Length: 158
Image 1 (tube, rainbow, N blue to C red):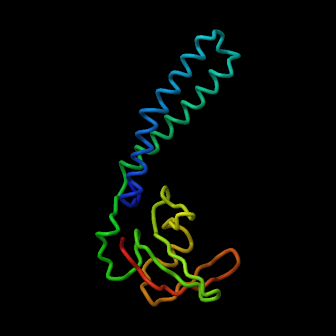
Image 2 (spheres, rainbow, N blue to C red; image 1 turned 45 degrees about the vertical axis):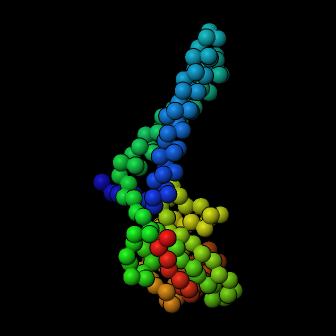
Image 3 (cartoon, rainbow, N blue to C red; image 1 turned 90 degrees about the vertical axis):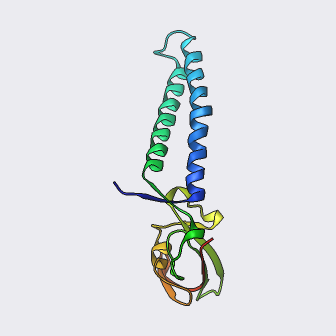
């Protein structure tokens, strides 16, 4: 079974969502189903159908999150000793060689990726181009608009 890489923060976010689904969302949907059943004929009861659909979604999400946690490989970026190489969990500052714009990203798992928070998925084109490189290297990234080159300014494990 393949392990899913997660940062400590990513694992915590999954645990929080799982806790919310089990302790809040699941009881709410059970109550909604009971309420809809009390209205009588279930064959034409839209509230009942909507609640059952929501229950299916919640139970599916709970199963998905439990599976991810069971196969998770939790990595604490602060404990990485990669000797300056870019690896999962690294925080990398890049400079676009064309625009001279600097940007900082952390390479994270799929569930924690959020470009607004500057967290990129380890399987994304830019992360794949960066993995294994180190400070001072130039990474070529195949972007929709063509190849972009980035100078790696710094690599941190925070």
